[in-house]
Length: 268
Image (cartoon, rainbow, N blue to C red; front, side):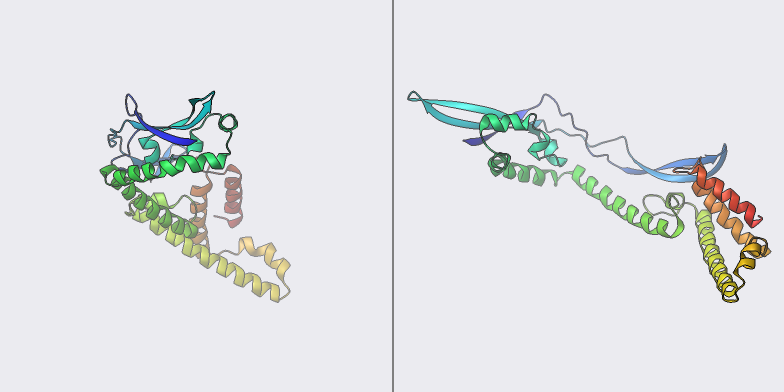
């Protein structure tokens, strides 16, 4: 029993190539019909690399045996994998086989035996296809896009851990270019105000608690904000409203109600 891999050709290439460019895709956010700010999404260009390889690899298992003194053969077609299936990371035959259990039973081998038999011959083909593809402009563009997106996701994750979810794309684009200096400054000011507020809140709480006067503190804390603190609270409210408003991406109506309740309690 042995594996045979035959090169066949499709009538045409049905696989789309990598996009040639990664682009900024601005989207203007509105709340209640009022334009707020632009979110700098990213997209790919419509122009793609042309794919010309039509070859595919038909994988089958063959068995020769004697019956009544004559040599006879059996053949089981396992699957067919195209050139671009390999390029796009779909070289695992298990993703292409229909009725695997029935085929294994008919052939009389285990799944591991099948894979060992196939990949002994298929691995060199995979290596040759990948080596050829890595020399193409399409592969180079694909790697470039991956580097840009990896750096973008890393920067976005770090930024939003500090300033909150869904904030980075309003300040920077996918290439890391600052697009909205004013909003960045607003986030930075709100972050600073938030830190100062909670620091002051904690100090006041600790002071009142240690004086055994915690109940009166909680009764009066909502009406004891200075004008300066109210300015800071307004900044905090604005950031929270932009994050949780139902018209925002991933908005939360219940959280928005709570934020509005805080606004009333803060007296702003």
